[in-house]
Length: 229
Length: 229
DNA sequence: AGCGCACCTTGACTTATATCAATAATCAAA
DNA sequence: TTTGATTATTGATATAAGTCAAGGTGCGCT
Image (tube, rainbow over the protein chains, first blue to last red):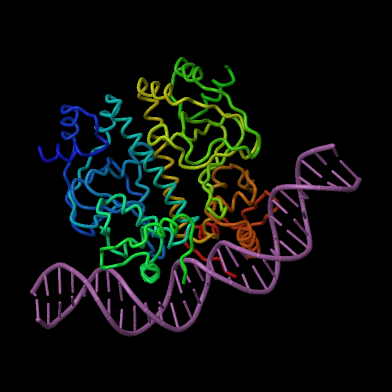
């Protein structure tokens, strides 16, 4: 019980709520544990609640008929997911799967909706959460439609650099294959672009460690630029 | 005043609100009129409120450095837009422009946030609205990343057919150039695909009137299928 | 009615990225 | 440490869609 409260207290969604309110919420959560690769829910499935990552890593994704996958989000501790059907429709719009062994909290829809009606600050937090997602999606659509893969990769590297304080290098939290899927491409293409960017002296790749050798060049590439041969 | 209430009453966002609550809202709206092609707001601009289309048509879009445009939404009477910065950040994530002469209602942020805190059903409606948007975006990302242009077009035609009751034909509310931008392509490509689909006997194109000759073939194409030569 | 401008279409060409295939590196576990 | 499996790289080739360019069609406006 104490452990759950700790997770809830670092969840931005619950920021500003009192001890008592957090206890109320932790009273309605249900623990779930998923192995690496295990499906949490699938697109089209009926939802009767949503989730919060307590520990581990989860991907939200779509797949095409031919088996290609597009990752929409990758979430870690403190991130809620699968809330859309709580507020509209009742089916999940995408799939969720654990990328590593994960501990997930499940919040049943009805209890949560009751909670939200009574606590305006909780509903404001949820509105903030959903609008952040919309913001991220506009960026993702812009990237997919208006930029080519090298620019998308450069954007992602810059994003990682902001996220991770260590200015020396950044570390990929996911495999390169998954990164390809997140960027809307395939591993082969990503691999080639890593090679080209290395040849240009923009980055140095050492497994999951990426050294950003030329941050300005990357900014440039992210904005518009073309990657020379 | 009476005219505004009528618009608000058909706006799904305000469904279930009392006469009095609608009056309260109409008390804080500000009328704006925009000519065809006029900008309503631009990406990155500070927002101090959001909008509702009273009459006309508005597009929400992103543009690349090189001038290519990706339409995110096209909104008509009753649709709210530009709400994201009300709940997160403070800047618009995309551009808005009137496609035709339009009458727009502006709702100042502060008054609206006050209103939402007092009326739980209004906040639930807004949560529903934002989650519908998230749903639409997942579809759009799926389309851009996982389907080719002919499939996207077929999906859009099927969507139009559901929207418009007349099963005989559908009518484009926008120009073909704008449709291209909505589908994440360019007019030339769209034109060629219209030609191919016509040659296959899937559709017949007469200006803005589109006859869906082979609905099953279109469903097929939308799902996965390839368009033959 | 006819002028002018925006929209649309068609053709030849280029290019980014996917596909297919083979090999290489990495990693976890026995 | 060896082994098998996952993950990553590299090469050759195919293809969808973008670019550039030139006409054509239609529509609103005086």
